[in-house]
Length: 93
Image (cartoon, rainbow, N blue to C red; front, side, top):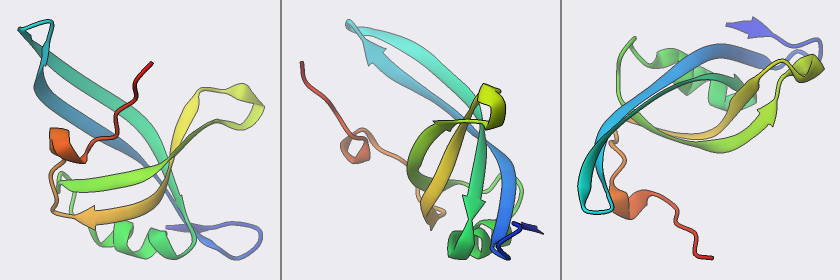
């Protein structure tokens, strides 16, 4: 854990996701690894997770400093929870 210049707790980490979903009636393996950041009160419960422990994360995407890649900013965490299709947000065009 580190602290920001403002004194807020912060954790830099990577989140991994793997699943098999259906696309156009066919199974498709999906995997993703993204850099993530937790600042403030959410940093403590994130720091308590064991390496490889599952969880349900909510937050937002933002570019890194100097536009160097993208970060997932964690704002909510449910340790041990697994995401289901019903729990994932959907959009319609």
